[in-house]
Image 1 (cartoon, rainbow, N blue to C red):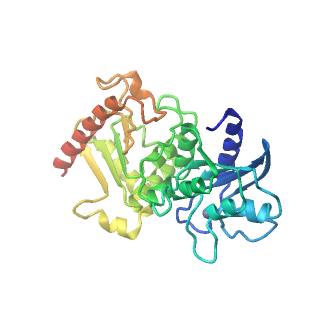
Image 2: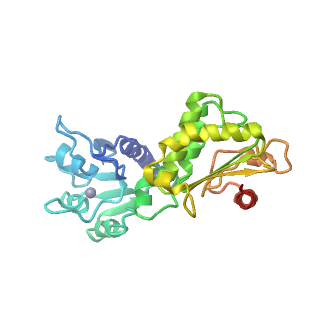
Image 3: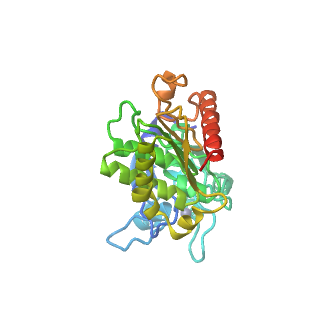
Length: 335
Ligand SMILES: [Zn+2]
């Protein structure tokens, strides 16, 4: 079992993982490795790390730590903390990391998260076990950090139930508005619903924030998600909403997404609703909601935007249903 003494090294491995470098923009895993002997760290590495001024070759963290940094050390008896399950398959002549760990006779491997690539999932762990290497896992809180850090990589491999992105602040107390919007948008990978009335809390006069919000909305649409913007029917509101969409959203859409605006099931929808119950509502598959202050829907809980999976799930579902009704109603009454 992992002990208290392990936690410092696990945390260090997570810190290493955050330094990962990648050769292109496709989703790659962020991986960190820490190697210890008798409770002392003797080496560490991040995925894609440069070594001795070499060009980044974007190699695996275990390879860099074992082969580049500690090629001549005796690793027999060592513990290796790796944030991702060691790989079991690489293109020849590269050796899978699991085989390198076995070849070096390490004593124990502590794994942060299983590899979401189903060619590998569980196999790295089992191969280590078969080689009589002790295997432990990181505790759930560190595992959640790693799942969040690797959410794009997990999604690439069909694992979308990643840890939610924390949202900093609430509508009524936002220390950094730009960060706040970015967090919300980042949590909305598939679906983003923005509802506003005359309060216009999401239509800031602030140029920077409007730009950030617009670009982020375009990002979701461009990668296949759906964005719905619902605003009230007041003339001024409609004008301002349309201006926002034209200036900050549409021009950032890819040609495909722009063509899609007129399609049967457009991924970017602007609907007007006669009555909008929320001054600002943001929602995605993880359910993030802000009802209007003092409206019948308002409850203190709903103001909590630090998003956790366990947080009042039933209550959020209720709001989600309510919003879906607004969307349905709006879409049906579109001019
Ligand atoms: Zn590997």
